[in-house]
Image (spheres, rainbow, N blue to C red):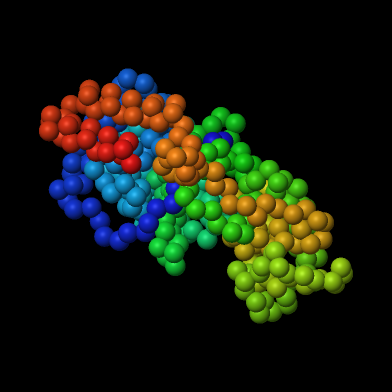
Length: 369
């Protein structure tokens, strides 16, 4: 499984004006058709889920280069522009309520692409798990509000989704790319892109969290009633207030101030009765969210000493890099490849010459930044 990047963007309100969005639909559609025609659907999927290429596309078609709306508006334009029956590529889901319609849209798409029931089930699972992993397994305090699920005629998929953190006025973007050897819960972030690094981020997908994942499953399968003694009986202190770095306890009879709640214990009991075989199966269960996973991780650490990863899985900025090496050195190969393919697509696109020149100008302005 490859997650090809993540970006932090300022959270902006409002929406693109109608005249601009119309042009974004036309231009994004023209570029996409050229990419599919020249390189194929697999390559289009790889490029559109690459954060560098996606960011370049957003700027080229005319949207604000650093706004959270870059994600929602560009994905909306692509959804409007791409005809599944013509191109063999569909963009499903979207922002807010549109994201919730993704499962139904997958079913409808099955008729257009003639996908088998098992393939549709796999697509639905991938869409749901990508969202759940980013909301529950990587606890970075960004709540998802946008989920675009991109599917090709062959049943391959990619995800571009975004979470928000209103108190900091920031949005964070997550990119996923289909891989035959998919593993949703073990190091899915192959290239994580972000301008800032959070403190105390519980990353249950990290390699360091492997033993914690195993112990978490064992704790459930051995009956979660056994872990009640480690938790505050009435949940007087909320889970978010638990500070794993500064909290000190005696060597025995420790109690973690974690609020599971009555319904939470019912969910853990249900999980015990189902006996999940591995951590992915545990995460996939209905009702198993960030609080339960965090509680299991902390008890695993307390009882068995299997400390999970508390590092934000951020490696790169969403930008190509800086000429001075900040936030990281420019990757010339990625940089040149992105610009080259975008320029080629624009030159071949069936669009008005004025639109072509304006798009090329915006692309080169991005390069200048």
